Length: 522
Image (cartoon, rainbow, N blue to C red; front, side):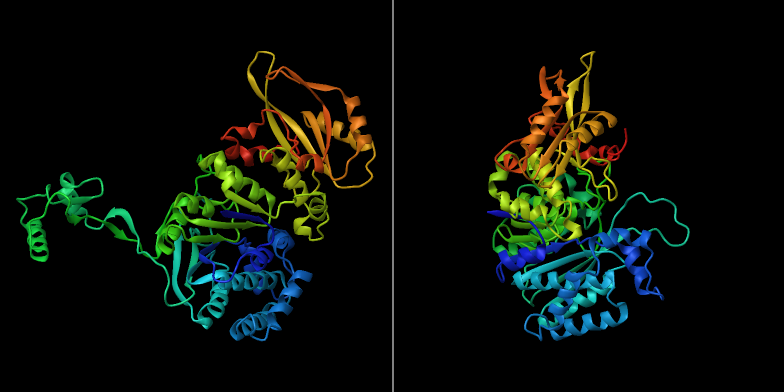
């Protein structure tokens, strides 16, 4: 069964993925390029906070980074190679205990685990940009090459996207993908594109080609002297005349080299899922076809919106996806359901999602700042069947943790969308003033309903909410309490927002980013 994990990929790989069990791994880890590049050459050690903020939110020098560094340098070769340890120590001397070193320590731990889980014939692809690639290349060499692996390619992905005018440098239009093997024996299939290698032959013999661009023994240009040479060669090699089932000649595309000209996902495309770093399926299809066979296991340890696992599913590979945010897990489940049908969800083993109150409480009380909103995200997306929208505002959320847009009819019976405000509270003793404040947010933000999801049961809030009247949905001709309170145990037992939510429409995913912009607006 295919597996989707919600959690830290380092912990997941260590706990759940066995040695030498994966055929192919691709990762596209987050990285804030400009902020990190500048850290290396910053002479006073002070990073521009505005520039580096996005990076700091993901990677920062903290207790986890300290523990990771200690784990690497004290392994004494039992887990990390001597070359890896020496590289990290050298980088510590150059970078200090900076956010950039935190990133490199984190990547070292994770790539080492990927190396462990890869089969001897396994392949690894790491996707990065121009600012990080030279550091990551050194790191990968110490992990793979020092232990008998090989660096096979530096693939350049040239994408075509709109970019505003730049004055001081050439427009940046490519990423780097490093391709490593774990040993000298690795699964690899040379690929060809759809452009005929010999366009003249293609045009010359087009009318003789079947749907596979083949010319068979019963349909070939008998008057063409050049082609008659292929016939003579066939007779010489086989001792007979060709018949209709024999392929005499096949026009193939050009061999794909290490420069890939693949268009990025168009922001206006129906395939765009509102995920900032979404990669095109063509890119992952090329990697998966080249370095795996049907039935092989494909791992993406930073699976984001799930392009790798969706393509692996389509190409009949087994897959493992891991992501640390429930936004990503939710989006992947929705994507798989939309692409392959509802039955696909029964074929996915989902691990890391709280199954009881104890698990929910543990998620709500995570100390890591990077995970502080994960309980909110999980609660909202679960309650809305993965169709709610999370407020990602890094500052004050204005009393809005999430939104759901529902279908309704106006007075002219025309379709319209109404807004439901979603709040999540984890406190044990909540006062009725919470309900009053939620009602105020609903009124001020043009909402029609407010839903409060609590970690603990709160009968006093349920009673208070009944005082705030009802909302009538004209499409369903049904009244709903304007303010509703539900606890997380009820959500885990199956309680859901039972209304015609906007995200039920496939177009909703494409509107995700636009809708988010209205979070704090009236």
